[in-house]
Length: 390
Image 1 (cartoon, one colour):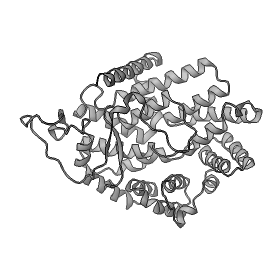
Image 2 (cartoon, rainbow, N blue to C red):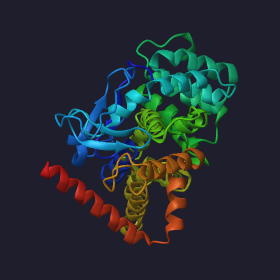
Image 3 (cartoon, rainbow, N blue to C red):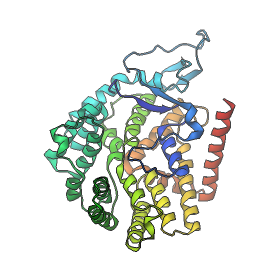
Image 4 (cartoon, helix red, strand yellow):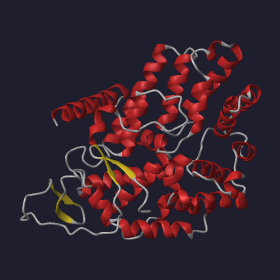
C-alpha cells in the first residue's frame, strides 16, 4: 500500500476488536473527528507500521542468535525472530505483503466495477480523493457519493470535483438513507441553520436504512485480493483496508448525538425523531458503532434499563464471537489454524457486513447471550491483567 500512509495495527488485538471494544465501553464523542479505536486497557499495546513496505525481511531460523524479540512460526513463512520493536509481527508480515498490496491496489484501480475502483483509489491514499469524486460525478451512484464525501473530507485542499460532492447531492440520490440526511443536518448546524437542520433530521428519522458505505470499503476491495497470496498476507492486507474504513470520520454519528442530546430530547418532536433514529440504528445498523449509537440514544429517549442491559450484553456476545476468530487469542498468533479462522470471518464480513456476520456465527454456536457476554468480560479482564503485568 502507499508507503506514506500509516496503518494503525494493535499488538495484542486487531483493529476489529479495538473498534468493537470502544463501542461497548465508550459513548460516541461530540467531535466531528473519529474517536480513537483503542480502548484504554490496550492502549499501551498499540504499534504503528509506518515504514515503507518494500524490503522483504529474511526469516531467521530457530538457531539464530537470540538477540531480538520473540521467535514465532508464521504460516507459510516458517520460524521468524521478530524485532523487539515489532512484538506483534504485523510490521514483519506487512513488509512481506508489500508487493501484493501494490498489485491489489493497481488491480482495483483498473477494475470495471466502480465500487472496487473507488476502493482502490481510497486505499492508495488521500491524494487520490479527487479521482474518487470524479468517479462519483460520472456515475451518479449513491455508494460512490458516500465514499467520495469521506475521501474528500480527508483532503486539505479539495479540488474541483470534490467541491461538487455534497451531502445534499448525496441525499437526493439516496433519499431513504438516513446517513446523508444526518450529514446534511450537521452541515446546517455548523452554518447556524436550525431550520435546515430540523428539516434534514425529519428526513433522517423517516428513513428506512442507514449506511454511509465507507464501512463497506473492504467488501468492495476483498474480491480482488491477489491470487495465491498466503494466509498471513491476506490477513494483513484485509486488516489494513478494514482499518482505513474504521478510521473514517463518519459524521452521521456526530450529528445524531448532538441533535439527540440530553437536553434536546425533552422537546416533544425531537424526542420522537430521536426515538425513531435509535430504533433505526438498532434494526438497520450493520456495524457495532450503529448498535452502540442505538443504545446511547435509546437511553436518552426512555429505553428501559432492561432493554439497555440486553443491548449491552448482545454487543458483548457478538464481541466474544469476534475474539474467537482473531490470531493470538489462544497464543497461536500466526499459526495456519488461527489465520484460517480469522480470514474466514473477514470473508464473511465482506459478504454480509460486520454485525450480520457475527450474528450468523453466534446463532450457529448455540451458546446463550449471557454466557457469551460473560466470556467477553473475562477476555477483557485478562487483557487488563496482562497489560498491568507488562
